[in-house]
Amino acid sequence: MTIINYIRQSLAARLSIWIIVCVVALFITALGILFHYSRIAVKDEAMEKATQTLEGTLLHVESTLREVEVAADNMKWLVEQHIDSPDSMYVFSAKILENNPHLNGCSIAFEPYYYPEMGRYFSAYSYNGGNFIETEQEGNDLYEYYCMDWYLIPKLLERPYWVEPFREQDTGGIQVADVITSYCQPIRNRENRVVGILSVDLSLDWFSKTISNTKPFPNSYSILLGKGGTFLVHPDSTKLFYQTIFTATLEEPDTVMTALGEAMLAGESGHKEFKDEKGENFYVFYKPFSHTGWSVAIVCSEKDIFEPYNSLQTYLMIIAITGLILLLFFCVFIIRKDLKPLKALAQSAQRITDGNYSEVVPDSHRCDEIGHLQHSFAKMRKSLAEHIGKMESVTEILTQRNRELMRANELAQEADRVKTAFINNMTDQMAPPVSVIASESDIIREKYGEFSEEDMKAHVDIMLENTETITRLLNQLLDASEHGTPSTLSNEEIAAS
Image (cartoon, rainbow, N blue to C red):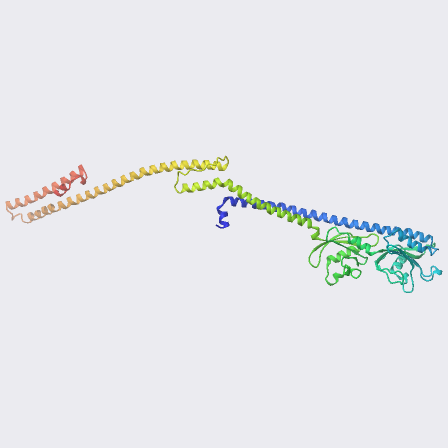
């Protein structure tokens, strides 16, 4: 038996399937609504988490940058107070590194020949080596510091300025291998004229470690863009300082990436969605530094963001499928059990249909609809048996009467046949006398004058004799008609006639 035939023949199977179909429809609707709003909630929570992580990182970095600025501002005041003492600049340069160990270096540089006794170049530079602080006189013909961005830009702007990260040139003195960024303050003399620059250096490695450790999700990563869109921090080191956020869009235009770069360079905050070259979806959360003009972004994979949602979805689907399978078996078991009396009724009905009217209908002693059906079916079986018994009795009587009618019909047909034979016989017996009488009448009419009295008498006697025969036959026919059927006449009487 195939599954389809089994389902067609099994009410329990059909009921179970309909129940499962309805439950599945409800499950799909409920789970669909649950998954929809869960996805929205997970996305909102993930975005909130990424945003808070980004803001926390920015707060930490900006707090450090603010400390650097405060330290530089305080040192600038001391430098300007002792601007006539060039030797004290070495002390101040080293002192700011002692008080701020996260700083990489400090330069207190002045205009060429500002201190005639010091020559053309005078820049007190101190370097923080971790366990030591080294100080030197910076500046020579190979390193004209007053032509460098960290000196020229704040001098021209006449205000503090964070310069873009750079790698220090070989000055012939202290070797600095780190990529650094500098906070530069103009130094003014008593006439309020810019005569030098105070620069404090912060290693980009510190930025990179601080920002790279910002991971709201396991596979997320952070990037830091300079003022021109150059990558200052990126997990792919080949892009650092050599590529901008717009580099990839030159070969393959990408409106989303271009819009992201423009928003970050414009100092905006927010998030955007984009796809990488593999087609994977990413969310980028970005926010600018208020002090430096840089912008930091956290790149989060959609898989990471929705990993809890996907796990929940998988678990719920497994639970739902397992529950539906168990529900199916449970429904089949319960429905088959409840419909077992109906199956017994169906078998009893089949035996009754086959003519076994004495079949005993099983009783489950139930008081529900099935129990009422059993009781009603038992009463119907009893009434049907009684009705069939009566019909059999009436049928037997009708059969007996039919046999009697058939016998009476046979007797009537036999009587008609005998009567017909009797009449035919009488008719046949009357024919000769009538013929003789007719013949004698013709003879008498033709030869009346030729016959003697004796001949005439002889012919008349013949006619009278035949007339008597006809009369006797007619009397017998009338007598048979008045007193009985021809069948009551004996064969001898018929023969005699």
